[in-house]
Image (cartoon, rainbow, N blue to C red; front, top):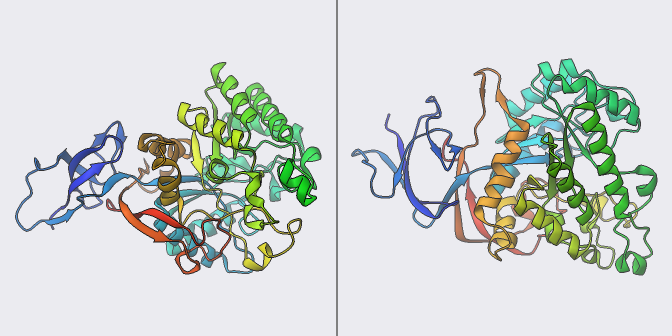
Amino acid sequence: MTNTYITNATWALTGEKIDLRMGHGDEPVSVFLNDIPLDGVNGVAPAGEMLIPEGARVIDADGKLVMPALFDLHTTINLEGHSKRESIYRAGQAANQGGVWGMLVMPSRGFIFDNAATLDSFDEAVSQRSFATMVPAGCISEGMAGEQQAPYNTLAARGVTILSDGGRMPTSLLMLHRAMKYAAAMDLTFAIRGDVPCLSEKTYMHPGTTSYNLGLHGTPACAEEIGIETLIRLAEDAGARLHIQTVSTAEGVNIIRRAKAKGMTSLTAEVALHHLLYTHENVGDYDTTFKTLPPLREQSDCEALLEGVKDGTIDCIVTDHTPCMPFAKKQDFVSAPQGMVALDTFLPAIYTHLILPGKLSWADVVRACSTAPAAIVNPYDQEEDVPVVAPLLLFDPAAEREVTPDSLYCGTLNSPLLGTVLRGSVTLPISR
C-alpha cells in the first residue's frame, strides 16, 4: 500500500508552500513543523522537492491551507429530550464541519461525570458514535451540587485531567479549597467560570443602555471579576492548577495578566468566540440567540479580550457550544436558556470575522485553538500509552457557505450566524 502525498499545500502559520507524505496511521509521529508535531506525517519538504513514486495517491492542495485541526476546550453536548448517543453523534458531525478534531465535554444533566460507570458508558458511546475525540471533564462535586467532593482518584484512573461543574462556581468555597489541595497531588486542573452567585442570580444580561431599555436586570462585571480573583487566590494557596472559563470583561483579563506576571504558571484562561464578536447591543429587541453565560459585554471588553488572546494572557478561544432546542429559545428573554451553538462554524467564523479583518493571525489561531487547549487537557491514548496529537486539516479560504438550518449538524438552531455567509471550508482530517 502506497503512502498518500499532499502537494502544493500552504502551511497556514508561515505561508510556506509544502508537500507532505502521509503515513498509514500505524507509524509513529516523527515530523515537527514550526515545533508542532504532525500526526501521521512521515515527510515534509518544500513544494516540488519531494520525490513521489509512480502510482502513489496524490492530493493536489493548491490554494488550500494546511494546519493542525482545532481542539475545543469548552463544549456542552447534552440535548435534553434527545438520546445521549444522538447528542454524541451530532456533536461529532458538527465538530468535523467546524475543523475540530477533539473537545472537552462539560458535565451536564445528561452527562454527570462523577463516577466510573458514567465515564465508561460515555467513552463507549463516543467510540461507537463520534467522528471526533471527546474528553470528559470530571465533576468537581458529586452531582455538580457544589457541596461534596467527587471521587478524584476514581476519575483520574479513568483518564480525567480536568475537573469542572459545568463552569459553575461550587457553592462551598471551603470544599473547593480542600478539593484543590487534594487534587494538586494528582496534577488535576480545575476549570471554573468566575462568578459571585449572590451578585449574578436573577440577572439576564450585561447592565447598560440595552438592559435599561428592555427592563432587564443586568449582571455586573464585578461579579465575574471578584470570582476570578477568588479562584486565583484559592488555587495559589492550594498549589492547584486553575483554568478560568469564558472570561468576558476587560478587568478579568487584567486580573489574569497580573497573576501570570507574578509567576503563577499553573493558571490558564479561555474566551468564548462570541465574546470576541458580539456585544450586549446585539440583544436588540429581546433576541434570545444572544443570551449567553456570562453575558455579552461592551465593545471595549471585546477589544481587551482580543488583546489578551494576542499577548497570551488568554490561552484559548473556545466555542462554549451549548445546544438549546428551538422552543426553549422562543420563550421570553428571562425564561429562555443561555447559550449558542458554534461547533459547526468554528473555524470558518474565526477566519471570516477575525483573520480576514486582520484582528488575529493564523499563528494566533493555531496557538489559541489547537496547541494550547490540547496541552491543557493533554489527551492520552490509554491503550497505546502515548499523547494524542492533533491531525491536520485542509482549509479552503476561497470557499463560501451560507449558514442555514440544514447546514447545522448539531441539531439545534441557536446560532447568531444563521442566514449569514461564512468564508472558508474545512476538510478534516487528512492524517488519520
